[in-house]
Image 1 (tube, one colour):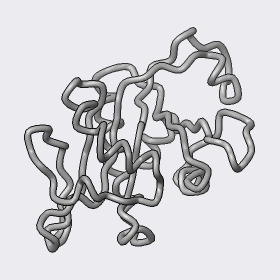
Image 2 (cartoon, one colour):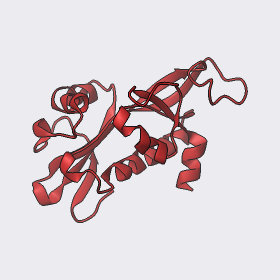
Image 3 (cartoon, one colour):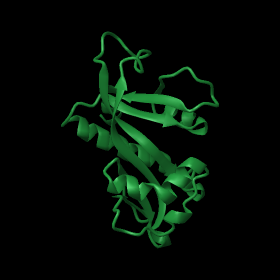
Image 4 (tube, one colour):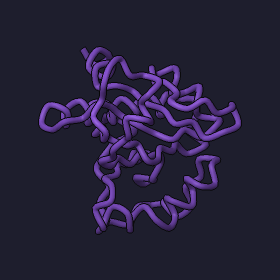
Length: 175
């Protein structure tokens, strides 16, 4: 993703990102993660992160997402199962995704998800990946459902939602 205003790049732990410490997406957990844990998580290889920089604003840290390897249990996938599954199901986990409040509603979240789906799609050509898993904040659940994610749990609208998008669906979405 790159146009005249924004550039998306892999997060570089050796770099200082303008306004990262002031990033505000409206979610306290995500904000705290960006301010105090993102660099540490990436430097220790617990996840990879991708950040959107606003070139019209001194390369301001404007959005990000993180991915890691993950495994779900067959029990977690019971709702989607159409037959037997192995005990451990390999997938990618979208740990965090945040868009600065000033840019929300402009399609940035969908562009970030598109980039994440392309990365999962490419990785699945090389290693076993059954799909993309995430824990959605209550306010984000409808966003992920609009992208094709399915809720794995039966929680209420006020609960964190365990959500999944199969690699088959990702492949269909990306053609």
